[in-house]
Length: 337
Image 1 (cartoon, one colour):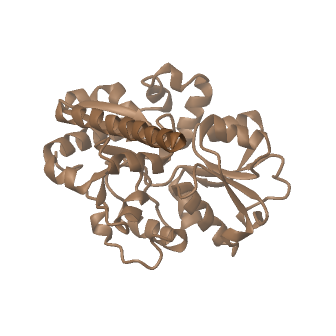
Image 2: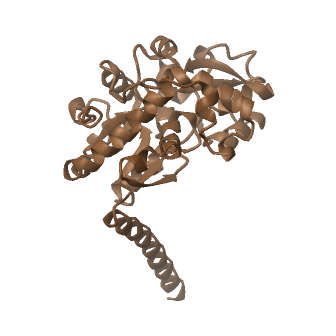
Image 3: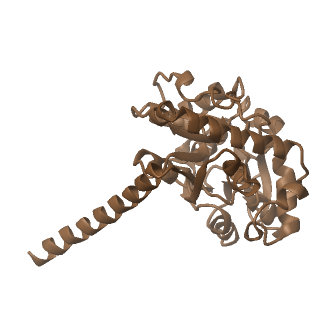
């Protein structure tokens, strides 16, 4: 009886805390604050989120925006569906996956025309792993199981006829935890982004195996552009808050234009110091990342079909399902002004 009572009490406390979190953000939304959850705010693939805030573009639009961070896009997606946040800066592919689950979510600004992801091989394993054709029997690191990195990893291996049962996928997160996994030998190969890529190259612990930071590299790996980092919202929120959605889109488009008209050094100078503890490394990583960004926030014409092709191959939720790609994104708001 006592154990049952305590168990129920713990459940009640946990539920209360979750309810409190959602309620807190709901109250913030009512007061006019737009809360955006970022799937790893220090990642350069999501640079436009913090840069827009730093440049003052949200305030220029009369918006009160709060940026929060979760280490993985899957967690950010759950916050959106729970109503705890109004928008997510994460991978576009979540909108396709969610449609199969009866959730209508759409990208309203596209930041990355390519994933910005890099498949890294540890220096220790580099002698035996020369390409993704050599990953059989290896341990492959991803940010999380069921994440965008896991589907991309499976697709790249599958291109060489290697099934997902022939290697181990290990969730190791990003940034410091990814670097630790490489250094400790817990993974042989792993998918990550800048500035982690440059940090591993600088320390000599990792080498580039597949580079999807540029359009050319992404087309070679995936067969087309692969829109990734984006701002996505629930379709119902966009329909009910068209003015706010347009202002958000306009603020971000200004940022994309800033990125395309300024050097890596000039962009880095606008970012907080704690994002670039090693400034030369940060600038170098940013230079390598600049080709990934769109200039206008619009969806690349061939992008959605490439993403659907990848997800249909390895995402059990998407495989064999009919997807209405027109409902997964819109250029309406980026073209509003």
